[in-house]
Amino acid sequence: MAGKRINILDRIQDSFADTDSEKISKYLDRLYAAISDYTQKIRRDSLLVLLLVAAFELVNSSPGTPLSVASFKFHRGSVVLQFVPAVVAYLFLQINTDGIKLADMGITFRRLFRRWLGERGYPETGGFILPATPLYWNIKQSLPSKDIIQHHRYVREYRTSTWFTTILVLGILVFEGHAYFVLYSGKFPRDILWLLSLCFTLVCLVLSGRNFIDWYRTARTEKSSLA
Image (cartoon, rainbow, N blue to C red; front, side):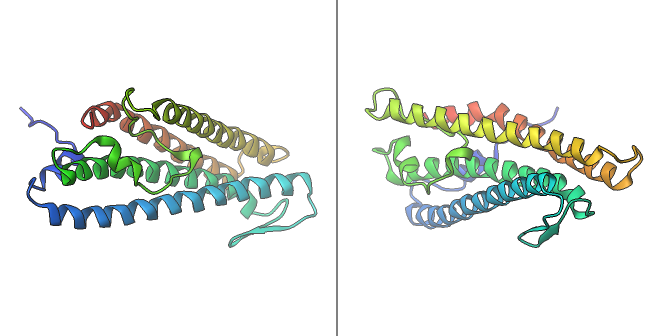
């Protein structure tokens, strides 16, 4: 019979004894820096997605206007334009993957910070000092208990974040469908570049969905461990 599967977050927590305050403190410093890096990376990738979507739509509405975003230069009818939706899908997969890692690191940070504080530690103390995350991609990790005065404000913040995240995801999906319809119009069904771009995009979107589902299945267990 296969052994019991272990959550990597539990493995990290079990790596430190309650008396290892100095080691926990150093690990928290490195973890805080990693969380900051992931947060900044999500912001940059999200901005690039927005710019690529806007550039694609501008080129589509103004055929004679060439545009460049970062290292991408394209115009109506260019080969590069066919891969813009694929790049957007890849960036969405990257944001999704980094966001899930960010959520896991946030949970680990709160667990270890609570242990570092000792008997008087509460789950809210660690989450309060975490780096700011984008409102449009702030994956829920935990909420303060109902006896906390700020509980309703944090619940409202989480719901607002969920709304923005939903709009972002739906917006990307709508853009992908619209972009491939525009690229396909007037072209032969056997256009190999269009087909390659579409296949790559579908793979990225499917992987994003699978990643989120796998994370969601363990999210409740991880949340309960903070209580």
